[in-house]
Structure formats: structure tokens, C-alpha cells
Image 1 (tube, rainbow, N blue to C red):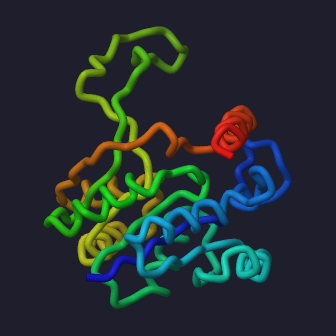
Image 2 (tube, one colour):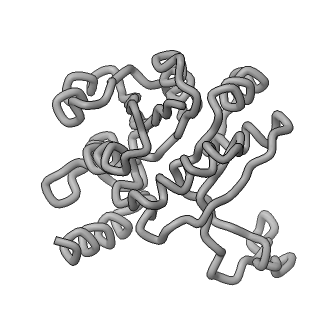
Length: 220
């Protein structure tokens, strides 16, 4: 059974405060995109990687990740995933992975794929929620304290059978989602979980980038 990993990398990453798409931001001399794609291949669990980038970054992306197939992404994340699915037919399993998680450890990727091979139709890596969580109203006043015992923070790569992910997207034409597993849930599918990893942190802000820089330097 073959596995393709789709890497949406067309987002601008405005919260990072830079003037280039986030996936092309450098983390110790290598872009987030390079690190994310290399991590997928290094895991040994992926047969092909398809990267979706802005049209004006196609050539640059091909230079950075020559082992991956590079296609034009869309204005929204779901548009990019659709483009990736169209570019990679014939695979049994599909991973969707954030380029903004460049330090994702190989064992975590393997856990996701192993769960698919064991029979799950959709699987996500998760971490327990450490902070106290409050529900607030539109004015910021606290309405309730949420029991965090059964809450989990979701990471990527998220894994799916090709059938389940295609069906989820077909059932929600034009839908916008930051979480592909959410589309599977909406379509009535069951989503399993595996243990995530703190190193699979998502780089969203300048502070996140600084933390990632420290982690890379410590591991050198």
C-alpha cells in the first residue's frame, strides 16, 4: 500500500510578520519547506511528496525540494489540498502535513502511517491540553471553565485512506477548513488518534520561529 504526503505551502503566514510565504522562511539556513519535506522522506513511511505553493514560487520550490512534485496551490488551504489530491492519484493512503511543522520527528510520522496500515480510515496525532481552558463570550467575559481531561491539541501529519479523504472533500465542495480530519468527521467518518510530539510544533509567530531556532541549534 503506497503513501503520498501532501504539503500545503501556499499560505502567506502574515502572523509571522515577514514578506514571503511562510514555507520559504529560513530556519538556520534551510527553509521550513525543505525541513518538512526532508522529514517526511527520512521517516521511510512515505512513497511520494506533493507540495502545493503559490504560482510565482513554483520554480523556487522545485529548487528547494527536488525530490517532491510541486504544483500550484490555492487561495485557501482546502484549495491546495484539492490540488494535491488531483496531482497524486493512485495511492492507497494520504498524509496532509503542514510545512510550518519542520521539526516533526520521524517516529511520529511512522505512527500515523502504521495506524492507517492497521485499518484506521483517518488518524491524527494529538497532545493533551496542558493549559486551563476557558469559554468566553463576545466581550471576553468568562462563561465557563472547560474540563480539559478529554481535550487534545491536534498536529500533523494527519493520515487518511485515499477513499476517506476524497469522500470528505466531495461531501463538502467549497468548504473551508484548517483541519482535514474535521471534514472527515462532517462526512460521518471515524477519526483515530496516535501520540503526537512537542517537537511537531507549528511555527505561526515570530516567537515560534525563535523557539524552533533554539531547538535546531541545540540539536546540531
